[in-house]
Image 1 (cartoon, rainbow, N blue to C red):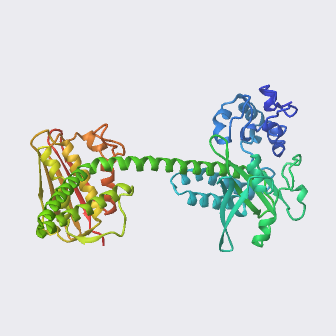
Image 2: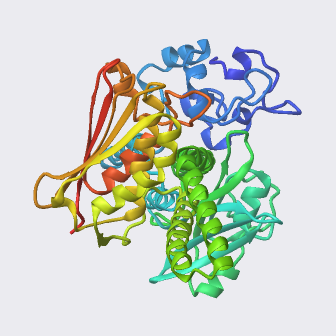
Length: 505
């Protein structure tokens, strides 16, 4: 007599136990590999009690199961009749078998395809599209738990119209029941034989199908499958559904496929949360980096504002209108600069499209260099420009150029020696649409390893004073203009950053 898993490992969680293992009561697998219920295909049953506690979905536990001695026993005893998965049961035609194999191959590729997708809505659309095709369903929908009090929310398209869905977490619907009880609900022949529609004949579940949505949307649901979506800590975070199978019902194979899609939904949701948390951290770090880089400019603007204010006060006392006008122009220009810099700090995105205006690249360079003038004098750095006349009129986002210059000049200052430092900012035109913006210093320079890592996020040569986002931000802005960055640097010989950027069409 062939042993079942609970008999082989003597776990005491067999069918007669007060707390039976899921494998011991999975009647849909009865007879597979000559076992009772899922006793000889236990590796595909979620949350089996092999070690006295649930050990997860197939994707999580497969390495443990495939290394289990019982798995080898079943494989050896069944020989050519051995079933690794609970698919293709009852198939008699070779065409059906080939179709099932094709579905399996497709399923094994979906994770790699979704891995590069970072938009949650697009990912869920891709999953439900695949789920419809694999199970032969008319429609598929993912609903996620949101709100307070929590409810299941989702949207789907029917006859060209988008419908928003909100379902309570209770027994008033199949979806709510699946989420509330954390179990699969598989219904069939809904309008003909409601009491016998549940997949588990022993279940004492109430009539959980809610016809309200069918009446509202003027449609009929004849078969329905709802599979809970669980987070990594096994909380139900949603439900994936399929409705109206082409074959009239959803089989055990369909359940298995949908469980796998539920795992992909969970991974997509977890990835989205991780990205949001990472972006929040990145945004805060970016603001810190920007504030550090702009501190030079802000300090010089404040100095100019104090000076202008002093001149205006003296001019008012002496009724000198000419000095008031001159000082007011300086004051107004620096207030505008301070406002622009403040907006730049609040913006995480390196560039905002559609803000290109024709202006002089040289004027932009001179403006930023003037802001760094006081800092240069305080640090005994000679800050000068070498500007080409061919760069006068061009269309670039002014904030983008300012941010490039602020980061590069700030880095150049930090690299300069304590005395006799030299920083040169240059402009040139290399062809009709390409401009060159370069910043050179006579500082400590970089070796090849430092040059290779300099554009990596959170890599900084100034521990404790920077977040390592300045130069990656420069790279992002340059990329917006289809440009490139060249670095000429040697240890002890200084560094030159050459930025080649294309004028927008």
